[in-house]
Image (tube, rainbow, N blue to C red):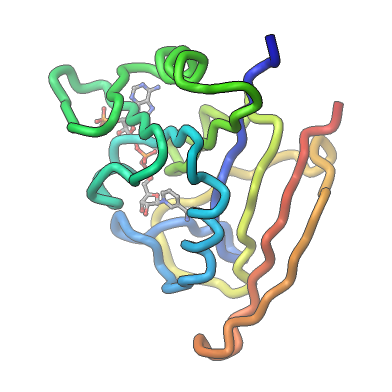
Length: 169
Ligand SMILES: NC(=O)c1ccc[n+]([C@@H]2O[C@H](COP(=O)([O-])OP(=O)(O)OC[C@H]3O[C@@H](n4cnc5c(N)ncnc54)[C@H](OP(=O)(O)O)[C@@H]3O)[C@@H](O)[C@H]2O)c1
């Protein structure tokens, strides 16, 4: 059987901010499109706070929500009580080479970094204020495979890069 692949998917600012008061600090429609393109048809795993900031299960994807609360139910999503249970669900919902995306937030990224083989990072080349951050990681353990550079003219020439990092074998 093909081993399961887990990938982190995150957008972060130059100062590592990923969120502010339970929402994204920037408005970057191109990043939302990128997110949709990558995740459609796949499994997405998220912490309960990230789920609540999105506000609904995302269509066309298996949505897995992690919480320690018992009795937390979301029609259209699979709710689990531990990271191990989430991994088990991914095993059951994945088909063939499907990719499983850890989509946040900070709390979940911290726990998932150790078992992810790939990171899709939108690097937003500006500082933002925020209260949640992407964890520091050891760059020597990751190889930059791809970097696509973009500028959003609508947003005061905001520069952002779509980057793929693979864990070195
Ligand atoms: N920029 C980005 O790419 C991006 C992506 C995603 C999210 N965000 C931002 O990140 C923020 C949310 O991140 P966060 O760190 O505050 O929260 P989070 O990681 O989304 O959710 C944390 C919650 O997940 C549950 N949880 C985590 N680990 C668990 C475990 N091992 N077992 C059981 N349950 C577990 C707990 O839920 P309970 O409290 O219910 O037990 C915990 O309070 C928001 O601002 C959001 O906008 C940004």
